[in-house]
Image (tube, rainbow, N blue to C red; front, side, top):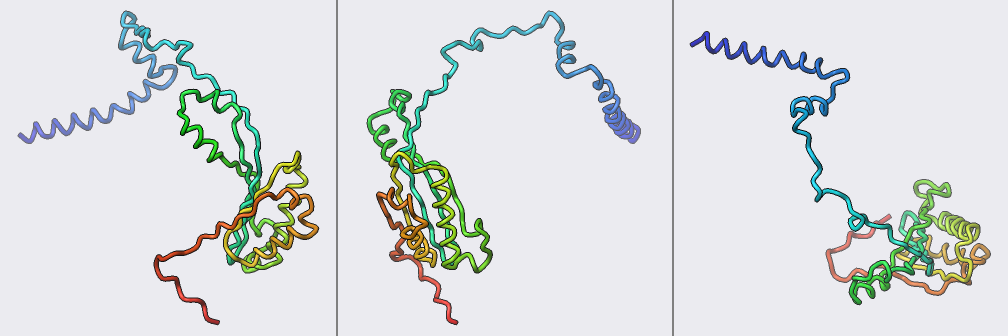
Length: 216
């Protein structure tokens, strides 16, 4: 009984010890593909079924898109401790109906009502060199606004009479600085193209109780 158990253990260790020699045999010019080919033999060569052949109908051609910029939107978020400005452009595909002939009327209307926006610029007051508590001050937001307006003029983003929409959120100190820069000399070439101004600040209605105000 004990001899049989020792024989099983010995055979198991011996079988496991031959794994390294097997790896040495696989090194060199031998590959897994060549080993499988040797095992299958020359007469068992596989043929590709005709159902797997690629036809011209199965190849998807790239859609011919003709993107046109309709307008630009400047998203402004004036937080208590920072100011964030993000410039996006609204694009429409002029060949959308030609590229999507199978879509329903409702799907096409939904596309034109919710046109995609592509981000062009997105910066905060830290980009112009302000750190820590300085980021929430008036001067930080004013310099950031002037920097964004300068980039818009240098890159000629509002040429050919393209419109600009402004969307503001929240009531930080940078809110007043932004409008002062827009009305001043920093906003020359920008405010003439503004066609819409929206305030999308979230208004709390109900919900949980707010934390108490800080007392100094």
